[in-house]
Every structure is written in structure tokens, then in C-alpha cells.
Image (tube, rainbow, N blue to C red; front, side, top):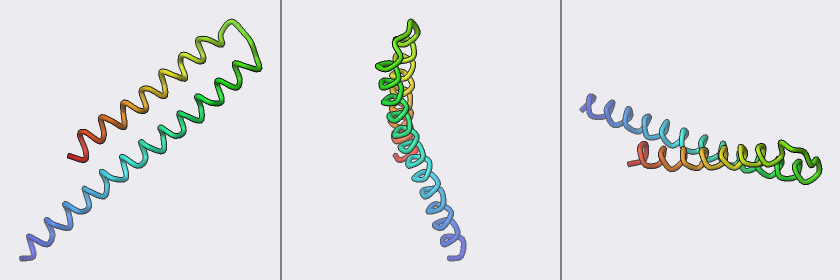
Length: 78
């Protein structure tokens, strides 16, 4: 009985860790959306030759953050 309770509490602990990781990834995705907005505002104000590259890098960064969330949800919360 003691072993079953400790295994149950260990399982609950790992489930909580997994949920925290997914929440942290979601917050990072929100942060990447803020970066994307800031880059778009900056490229509208400061028109340079590098602006399209910066905008593309910000879009790629946001896409990778979203892909990371999808992978984490698929692997950790199954």
C-alpha cells in the first residue's frame, strides 16, 4: 500500500512537471508574438534594407515557438 501511494504521488509529480513545461512554452509563444509585433512596428518606422530579413526572422521564430508547443503537447501530455 505504501508503495502504491508513493508511485501515485510520483506520477502526479511528473504530470505537474509536464504541465508546467507546456505552460512555460505557451508563455514563450506569447513572448514571441510580442517580438513579432515589435519587429513589425520597428520595420514600419525605420525603413532599411535589412527590414525584410528581420521580419522574416521574427515570423520564423514565432512559427518555431508554435511548433515547439505542438510537439510538447503531443509528447508530454499523451
